[in-house]
Amino acid sequence: MSSLEIAELTGKDHKHVLADIRNMLMELGKISAEFSANVPDSYGRPGPSSTSPSARR
Image (cartoon, rainbow, N blue to C red; front, top):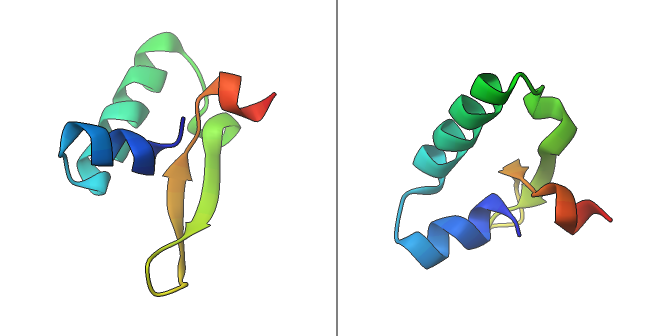
């Protein structure tokens, strides 16, 4: 599941979901780059997104 999907499901701003993910990864001692990707926004511009490990299989 991507961070964009999580933001949509929870009604949160995407930037807040990304901040929450970064905080959780820091607490777990993980590097956020392991879960990051660039996903086009509604205008086709690349932007940050995170994916869960299960989505990367």
